[in-house]
View 1 (cartoon, rainbow, N blue to C red):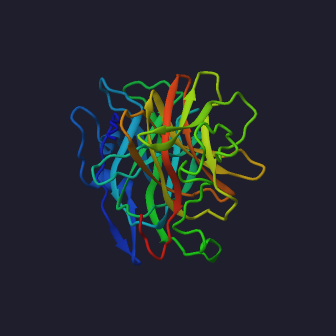
View 2 (tube, rainbow, N blue to C red; view 1 turned 90 degrees about the horizontal axis):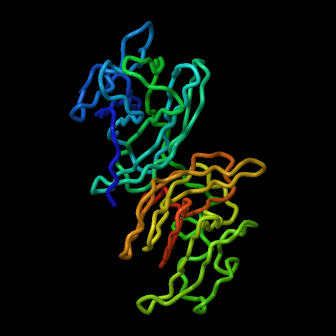
View 3 (cartoon, one colour; view 1 turned 90 degrees about the vertical axis):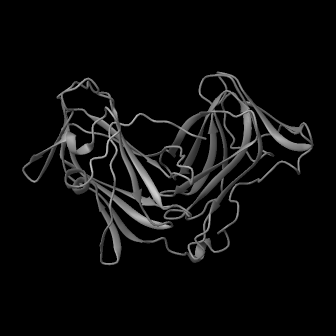
Length: 338
């Protein structure tokens, strides 16, 4: 499914190879390398002014001041631990976030929310782990700015470090040996259920105390599928969780084969003990009329993760979703296969 996003600039990343690792200096490339840009939209190099040990980051004088900034494609290795390092001092009360994309062979991808932070005009060193999934060779980063007034010529902030550092290959772990390559969700399909089954606990769905959505096993094209009917006011998250496992630092793929009517959003949940569960948001999309398989690569970057949940979210508009099968599979680092 092709998603189109408005880009403020496009950046070609290059490899700097030293110590046997690929380290990508995004600032260096922006200011000394290619300045490829989408027609009518600025490149990063046009938004940076040298200042002391780094660069002032600002909007050029011009008619376009959108709030999304794309860093283009960056070559990476699959099943590898990277660290995004960003030393930045945003303008007063600036809020920023970063989305991550793993384009497939057709260049298509859904954005995966990587991080969001607020800043009160303080110089901050941000460090965010990225564990690349199997089968990928590029990633894209997108910065977005919000809760701030943007005008031509306005300063966004100051930065003197913005790089992607290769740390090490994802390690094989004995405690996950029995789970690599297997579906961690409580069910894979609905063939074992009787038609009309609507007990959400039996269906493996997360229990909750709010108004439930309607869920029932039905027959479609001689196959048993789960039909979900969401009405505004229902609980919005249709979620299956894994059992408790030490999943931090692992990577894998979520798969859903679905069809439906309305709009939805895929989500990845990192359940944590005594803290709020972390929600990783993929992009919104229109539910297809025909059966479509979605493959969502991910890495578990939260060290507090106890369980992983695969979810479909409905957002305040009626939707019908039919699910044929689903899975969440952690890849074996020794095999490095999707």
